[in-house]
Amino acid sequence: MLLRFTTLTALFFAYTLAWAQQSNSLFFMHRIPQSNLINPAVQIDCPVYVGVPFLSSLHLNLNSTGFSYNDIANGTGTINFPALVGQMHSWDYLSEELHYTPVSFGFMYDNDQYFNFAWTERVESKLFVSKRLMSLFANGNTQFVGNGLITSNPGLNSFYYREFSFGYSTRLRGDVLVGAHAKILFGLAGLYTKRNSVDIEIDALTHNIDARWNPQVNVAYPLGVTTDAAGNVTGVSAGAFSPLPFFLNFSNPGLAFDLGFVKPNDPITWSGSILDLGFIWWFKSTSRFTNDGHFVYRGATPADLTNPDAYIDMLADSINNQVQFQHSNGSFVSFLNPKAYFGGTYAFTPQLLAGAHVRTEWYPGRPVVGLTLSAIAMAKKGSSVSLTYSVMNGSFANIGAAINLGGESFQFYILTDNLLAPFYPERVRNANLRFGFNLFWGCKQKKKKLSIPESSGGGCFWTWGLDQKRKQHGVK
Image 1 (cartoon, rainbow, N blue to C red):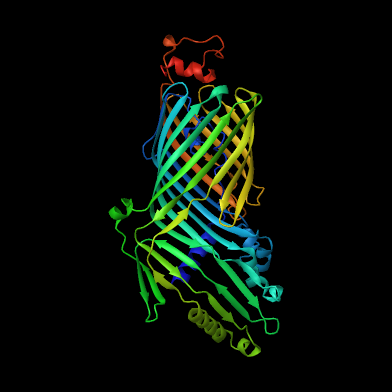
Image 2: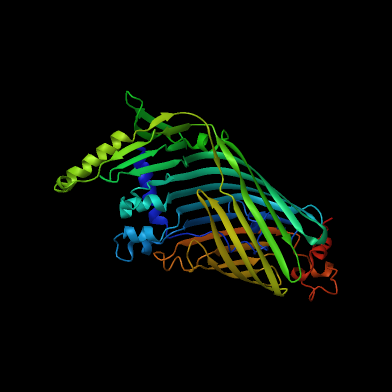
């Protein structure tokens, strides 16, 4: 049952892998308060912002680091497995993120200090597999005769957790902004696969396979587990779902931190952040599945090939008999996948910027790095638009856009890193979507009350310096 569940999950990710990409278009859109989510140093222009309750931010992100649907089937509907494996990285991943922020707000305490809060429901999953292990299935075991194969087991990490983020940003000498988030986490459900060594030996004469591994899968969710007399798992089923105890579960605590900075310079403004340095400790409704890890496969003979159906049934029985999982209960710790952003913007005019940044995420097994180029235009009353081009996950076909409308009292924003995804879903590896609504206080004043500085760019609030804005509206 456990193996069947993992297989079905892998098939689901394979179906959805055409939709994927990280949220790169948001990084330099500092007029959107939610840009603080990926750089905690960013401050708002207005004294106060509140995300529209239950509509503050919705973020959907899915990605494949190695291939699109066309790469798998080559437009024919038939998988070319050897060709697919040939283009893989050492480790490849199918990932998804769903972040829903029902409550968020922020305020300027004085001229330099900014406080903010966000409550976010986060669902994140990563299916990972090594190229060397996939090559064994795609190209046979001859390539490993004599040297064997040493790698790590494939797996799936999938978590649903609640995040309460408390943010602080301050301005230092030289207008440098630094900020941090302290995040309290509560896990609601999780599946965590520990990466252990897989050691496979190939007999030089018979080409028989002798594999040793020690897989361990941890689950945090009510399960019904049945075992045989020897203690081997014979069945796994999900327990009854009770909404109130599930969503009010605060028994799996965790902590995380984000750090960031913005350094104005002439002519380049530098920005950077490190996100999701943290962990969750799972205590409630936990199950652990382990295996002593020894499997022997003797290979097919000419006699076996005369009745392939019977041979496949025999092979399945052999695997079931030799790969037996044991069940136990016990807490476990899962770590978040850290991310880092670093880049800069160049101002051609006060309303027109060009930028570039690098994004790195530490996946199980290796870091995944991408580059994004941005062009940003800002209107005088708070609206802005951005076009981006990203090289990510081995794909060069990622043209994105971001737009925020309004900004004096109300704002709607929407952005994506891949505009092509809805039109060519079978070709892309990357897609995402984020949108939301914000309310502002203190940005809009009656003209007769304004004391307009001579260098204010015609008196428009959005062209004033930060000191001028806050002083006008009574911020200390």
